[in-house]
Image: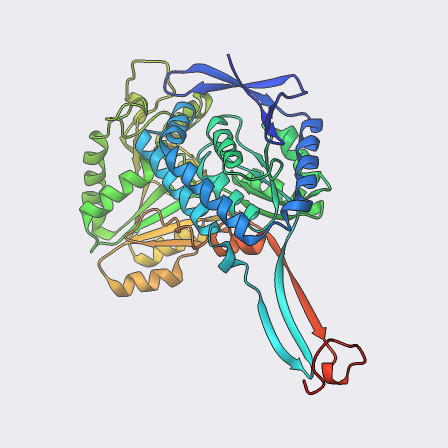
Length: 495
């Protein structure tokens, strides 16, 4: 059985806990590896190594840091197919989704390659007579990242490039469900020339998470996952004096107005709801069909669902793969039955799909006439289930978004520029799409939701990432006039 270990000080290190967790191929149900689960001592070793490396790394020149980051970017590009293959093997997403994840990850490395511009300070000359004031940004020290199973390549690269480029050292705790891709990228990071200790990887579960949250030498922590765990991470980390950004779950709404392009809206709903088996925090979970658009829209979505090919992600013809575990598949399937029992109309029932192997597959589902009191609406399902809520007016759709406890993403489909512009202001969410169902920002903006979708003062990656991983220092200086100085500066007497 393949053993997946920690990466500390640039070398593979076995765990001291004696505990392991199985890693499966979700498309077959076969166990393919065992991943080590860290003990407290393992975490302490990784943090101590990162802490020792910080002293030198923080003084490494911007030019050298940038050169290494460019080399890392080139290595990730050159190995993109291998990273995508590892994603498919352990997460189950189809290769096209995996390739898209790697492409979006690379955007964040490229942003960090602009370090020289990003870290420029400000200068005020003669703020007072003979006094200059200038500000700079300084690294924090050892920072950590706890990342989810659904984007095991992209989310670590939301964090690592910016953190390291700013002069910090980093400890990554990836998901134990699919750890191979982030571990491979960490090996590429070493190959790019970064000193050992600048990036360490600790495999683990709650033991590792809790130790990172309380460790006195971890200055800041970034997290992406479910809302209950995000809240726990934020509250625990800040209680221990750390800077924390913790992104949680979502229930993203897509409003479709009567004037919308039905074909575009249906295509978008299907790709946004069922891509990556719906295991995305930016997946569209709810379509709000306004007025008489509902019937034709539901029919158009249903037609497209029937054409979806579900199978092993390595099959070029597959458009959706399995869910991450058998338990999660069964939990998602349970929501379909609950929705039906609560009065929703099951237009397409994913439980009826048949598959020929032991993989964690579930067909796509569409529930119509969903109301806000049903569990399929109130809960984050995180699977290939799309709910349709019917509304009479635009305002009812906006009110649904505002009343929802999450505020990650929201979208509207319309041909009306006035309605679109109004929605930009009205939508109670951190990321808004106009005729775009999944409005994930490009790498030179920042990602983050509102309300229960995010905890902390900053969003993640992009400019906000630079802000999170540095702290400001302001210097005020006064120097005597050389002409009146008693110190011989070597200037000519008429200087």
